[in-house]
Image 1 (cartoon, rainbow, N blue to C red):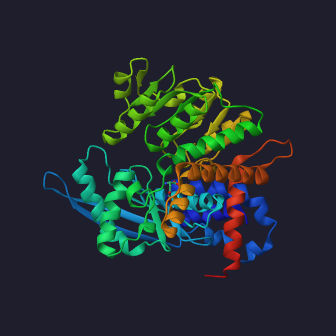
Image 2 (image 1 turned 180 degrees about the vertical axis):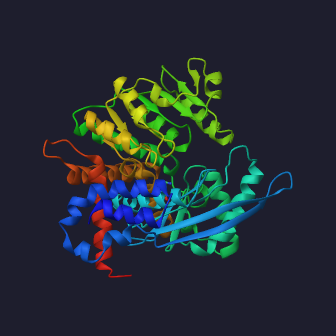
Image 3 (image 1 turned 90 degrees about the vertical axis):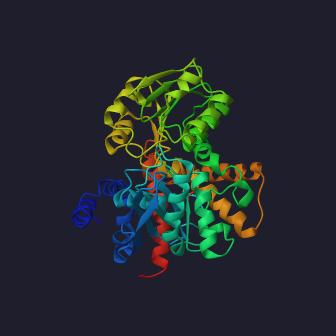
Length: 446
Ligand code: GLU
């Protein structure tokens, strides 16, 4: 396999799908060496098959807004790979959603899910519907219209969607209600991220952020460091940032920044329980701004138009959107003394930013390893649903902790460099790839 030849072919077939092409290149560059050591993969054309989704379902979503106007959005489900289990992955509602974005996310999800140790294939779905400024009733009607098209393509052993950017417990509730009505069965395993009284799992809302901090702790420990008393800058203020802020604070770190599309909150005194709770209120307001945090907590300051990366910190945690941390941001962080970056968002750093961190020799870990605790806990929710029971918070948290330690060990196993340092990007990509490739090989040409 020659990465450049393969990429040239993909660029010809999928022109303009920049996020998808970026995600594929990153994985192929990491696995090239090990792939070429396995002629059986080459013979079975594993890579050529793996980079294309099994199928993409696209549909129109029509709904009526509060003023009686008819609105039309695009809906998608990218069923990427089912080699190791039923399709699994979130649904994203955001104005910028398009096929390229969901293909990149479905591709990443395939490797991430393989890392979790649980039997889940990769998928992603979503719509260019923006929840920003929408009323609760509008969100409900949109979710119902979206599910009206999707329901026949999903199921507990077929494809199990969950939340992602713009989709949290409220949206999953509206989608599940409509699914149940259409399917005429109470099939909780069809969606994860459900409410606690109807099949949801304790710790699922916190899981992505908690898992990210467990992974970060392992990474620091492996490098002979500790998270205690370190300063942490987090981008975003949604569900993932909330869980990360909560666990980082619990582990003794000081969260000195959170951010939104409108700017950054500089929070020199760190988080309190009240501040962490307020992050949830901010998200639920559907306004997509972080500025009110500083009005509510006068010991913090809002700096308009700035990113979290303008705040000097030890550890940076991108928790918002793909490519939210670019080369300039990376240089700014390094100049401010940052020595650890753990991507919590999917593909949060641009290739230039990753290269800048790796050249500087700081600790860097990619989203598909760091944020895998979210989907892993979705897998635990599926298990509970299949058994018709629910586990205690302690039990779920213990399992999540164990899974994150396993993911860290896989990264170390496949990413250890001759000088003893760990290339976490390579480690995560190779570990995920080997598992999916082996399963595809064993299942023949399909
Ligand atoms: N959207 C999350 C992710 O990127 C969670 C997916 C899930 O729970 O299925 O992994």
